[in-house]
Length: 142
Image (cartoon, rainbow, N blue to C red; front, side):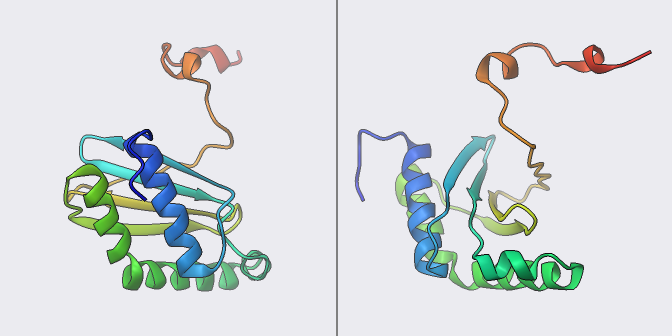
């Protein structure tokens, strides 16, 4: 998997996709990777099976799917942690996963002892908008 023409983020996204497929048998629809100040967030979109999506339609079922994926991630994430270290040269100190059953999204967070809040937006924000000043008061109504 040594692909020097890819960025670290692209290499991690590939590794996370392979990890998810090996772990669950499913290939995510897409993978997003962001890193800032020692926190790496990997988001796997469309990572739940149709059966898990159906089960997630009830609160009890959603809790079951979340717990299953957290335990699966905790017991199997060492290989991905090692791959992240190989790609970045930086050891992963902590790793956790959060699942949003309604959308089929799995978020894996690798931190260095930091509290992380992860917000999944309804859609992406174009780079030119993200890099501009916030929308703030533009959406207020009188």
